[in-house]
Length: 587
Image (tube, rainbow, N blue to C red; front, side):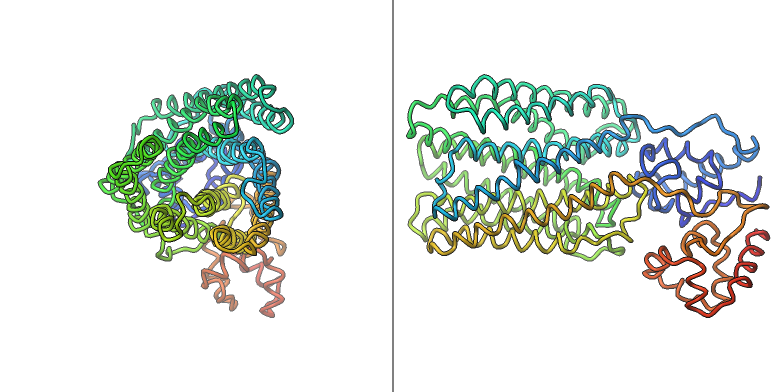
């Protein structure tokens, strides 16, 4: 009972397999539903940081739980069971991938190709453009955001998901609404589409309403209360609810337009601020909130200042509000005051983005590299580019003699939606999803091809779309960019889908730590070292000095068996195994 030893560097599967009673402590702080019965391959120290638990407190509770389990002969009343809500994220992520690679990004690529063929941004009927835009916001961003929130937010708050049946119902309502909306708006014309599209909007509004209620009740049941990053997330939830409520209204404005001239005026007046609600008040605000909580704890970025975070929230909120209000004033009466107000609002958003990048240390290299970090750094760089483009739009219009450049504004929107929002989705998911499935992201595909293709495609799209204001040969280049981006998303989607379907491997070393435990030649080097840290001295004695290299220990040691290692180092296998087993018997 006194030989219980749990150290910060021990991995969760090692702790749980040695001391099964500790699983209850981990689950109480948010491990439940993550990595299967033994948990993900992360250390106790990482868990304490990721779940905002003081390390000394966590270690003390784990030690006490382990001792109680030992006194009871290894039995414990607590039994780990995955609840349906622990796995809810899977269907949301899979549906989001399907939407992106069909009526979302892929359909958008074909629309872009049609622009290129006709050398015009008016080559595609507006209702088809709205099919693509709606699928991107509600089907791609919305479904992924809902799945991530259902899984991560309760764990941020040290609680469980409230109203899980309501959460489950929100998936079917959202998918049903998206399917009805896409089919009716794609294949019906004029007022014939009005009833089914509004019905679809009601389904989607109900889905978002259920989602918002579940999140608010989850926060209220938490003992942690509302924290500084919650204001971003709760505001984003309000923005999502508002756009879902307004969506049928926007459809009605399009369908009921009595002439093409009225349709163009309505789209120019109302759809630009509506998209800002979707992309800024919902998506970007949500990412800001998640970044405050997720990036420092999970990926080791700089811990944000609470005071500066509040300032960012205020500046960004004022920027969004001013952007919408002054734009509508400009449409009604283009006075200098309205123009200055709109320009000031764009600068507030740009300043907010700069402060986010600075306070989180996005451009600094974190102490520990991860495959998701390159996506996140690139995403925030694209955010700066997007807001700088928006702030410079009046200057561009004056220099080119245009009253409004559809090409330039579309390029800004693409830099924001694909460069920032989609890049963040790829970055966060490439870390979170493998861990939830009990996989180690450090030894997975680094997704370099997806990263480079998405950035190259985005750069081509943004630059060539602006160039179409000046030269026609830029249209074919722009038309090709969409398929480059879709290829990147497909590579990412395959990786994430496989990770979702993966199941935690059965621990390679048996849970027993005393008599009866045996190390065999087929075990992985890293598994032995993780489960039995005391064997490190045996490895070093026999010349396995490579295990002291942290990079090799995270990579090669997780793939190489003891038999393979003995062959490489010309070590007698039987003698080495005997030495390892003798060491673990001594404890």
